Structures are given as C-alpha cells and as structure tokens.
Length: 266
Image 1 (cartoon, helix red, strand yellow):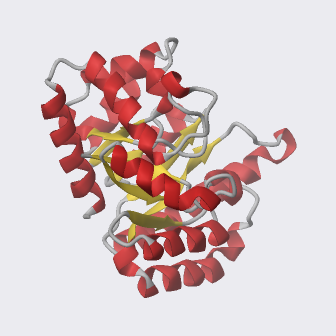
Image 2: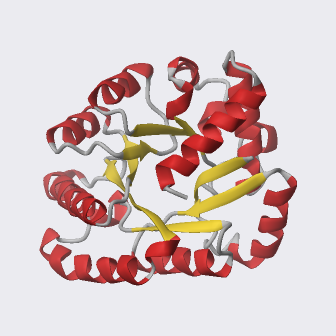
C-alpha cells in the first residue's frame, strides 16, 4: 500500500471527479491521501473531504507562504483563533499544520522585506499551533534554500516534512543532522530526467525518512505527463523510486507506508 501524503483534491478540476479519484486510488493500492490546506477556504474544503471520505482522506490547515506574504502579521491573533477552532472542532480529521514555509518566487521587489517578514511570522505562528496540538508541519520551500534551513534550526522547528522535494542532497543532510523527525516527500519532480539533485537525494536518504506525494492536481509524473495529476499517480512516483534505490520494491513500499502512518499519526 502507498499513501499520497500531499494532495489538493478540493480544487475545481478534481473535486467533481472525487468518486472516480477514490476508485482510481483503490485500483493502484493507494490507501490514503492527505488533503492540504493553503488558506482558510481550502482548509475548510480539505476538512470536508476528510469527513466525506473518512479513513481515506485526512486534512491539514493553514496558509501557504504565497498567501501569507500578503497578509499583515498584525492579523495573526485573529486568524490563529479561526484556525485553532478548525483544529479543535475537527481534530480527528486533521493530521498536520500547513503547508507553511518560505516561497520567494513571487516576491515583489519593492515589498520584499515586508513579504519575507510576513512569511516568517505566519510560519512561527503555525509552528506554535502545531506544538499545542501535537501535530507536525508540512513545509513548502521555493527559492529559499538557505533561509529555510537556518530558520528551522534557529526556531527549533524539528518535526516536519519537506514537501515536493526539489533541493540538493546537502539541504537534506543538514536537516537530518538537525532533527530525526524531519521527513522528505518526493513527488513528480523525482520522475523527470533532469532532476539529478533530487534523484541523488532520494538515493542517499535513509529509507525511513522518505514519504511520497503527488501535489495533485499539479504536474503529473513523467509517465503520465500532460494528464491531470491525482492521488493514484503516487504509484508512478513509487516505481521511479524503486529504480533509484537498491532495496526490494516490497521493502520500499512497506517502509514508506509505515513512515507515512507514523509521521501523520494515522
């Protein structure tokens, strides 16, 4: 069995097909899919899917850094209450906080300092909420390699997954040395020929630190590139990992399945 540890099936191009998506998951032996919140609205939608398909879907809540960078940090106390209500009222469906982190790709030059400060403040607020409810963080990092590692170490953010891994082996090594409770989730990037750093990281990591994901509905694995991504495609990412690793497919599948259950406390 495989778990898709990061999906967004509430998106308008997936949600109308949700029954078919669940059937496709079963056909590919993908047992669960974690629906990741990116703001208040999508967090509510993720919870709704987790309730509708209890035991198959689970949810996370909070602001994606692209959203957080444009929300003044002065609003954190109010929104913390809103998100905390979502967590406390739906705790059995919620398995993590996030996705949070740093994304510098869309920073506006004349607002860069303020936007970075907002991302930092919202990330710290999410970490505090995660600790309060004994939940891990789902971390997004883009064009922010050095700052991400430094921020995590400085603030002792030691229980998390780096989602949609796109960095080099050194990035993973630094975080492994920092904490034994940080995992690394590989998605569609792993299957692309030019992703040598990502493939090298997937090869060198201890197997018990690896998770798999699709980041549905975004880019599909190479073998089905051009189609709409969905949780069933986790199987193709698993197949690529098996080509990279030296362990047997059976060992890889069982270990990563147990990693996913353990990380999300499913």
